[in-house]
Amino acid sequence: MDQQTEMIKIAHYYYDLGYNQQEIADRLNMSRQRVNRLLKRALNDGIVEIQVHGYKDSNVELESQLETRLGLREVRVVDHGEGDFFGACVMEYIEPLLTEGINVGVSFGSTLAQVCSTSRQNAPRNLNVVQLLGGINSNSVTSRPDDIVNRIAAAFGGKAYNFFIPAIVDNIKLKEMVYTEKQFQPILELYKKIDIAIMPIGAMWEETTVIRDGYLKADDYTMLQEKNAVGDIALRFLDINGNIVDEELNSRVTGISTEELKRVPLKIGLGYGWRKVKPIVAAVRGGFMDVLITDVRTARLVLECAQ
Image (cartoon, rainbow, N blue to C red; front, side):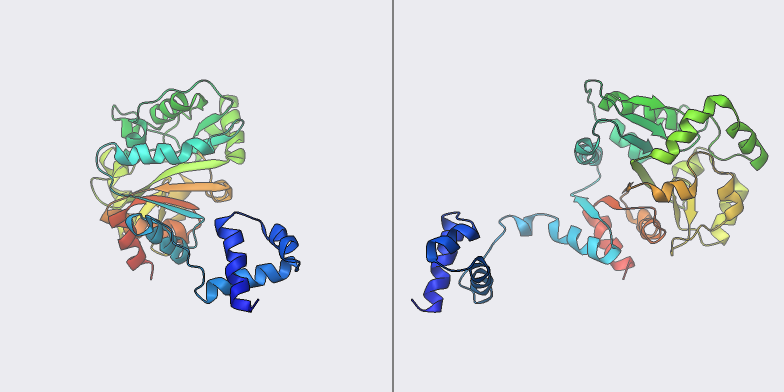
């Protein structure tokens, strides 16, 4: 038979009948390498056309573009961030990752509070949910990292580890003294063993959680603006290139250190809305994110910003 007929027959066996390449080689008395080569040529010559149904109706192309542009391991783009929809999508993504024996670190913010609002209760499992940062005394769930940690631990049946110390101290000496206390040693050791970090992206504006709820003093906020901070991830305030804008302030942040955070194997950043565009780009450039979960509008703006 001529080569075109041979390609058609091989393609029929492979795609229609489900034979593997070795089975086709044995059946047609040729090498497996020749079968592989002719299958590739059948694609190149248009004898075989492969279609992924639903591709144009999904966000897959946008996700792929962002992964390539930003160099991220994965991007998950959801349709919108309204109501509890975004939180439910985040829960759906992270649940398969929370396997037995892992340490999950979480920060705080309105986006994580949205995740917590997704009602669920799992049977107990052997995993730790660790508060990555200190907190602040507030009645707002977005300002209570301990409450968020407890709710996520309850949702996935894990054990919560809280860190009861101000998120940003005025005096570095206080932080150093607290870190010597025996009661804090278990969580400080866990910071070296975090497998997954889940962190909302923060923007620099007056209504963001860290400003509204008093994590930052007015003078610190002004200073960060003057130094061109665009936002934060886990209270690491960054410029558009991902650099820490003020090392003195950064040294006063309690919880996981910058170096420990960057070493976490899987860092998941959450955020949507036009104010989060530059902070997302900054967090990626700074090495604070491996996976991004966002919505369609934000994803398109991030693509433009990251050019």
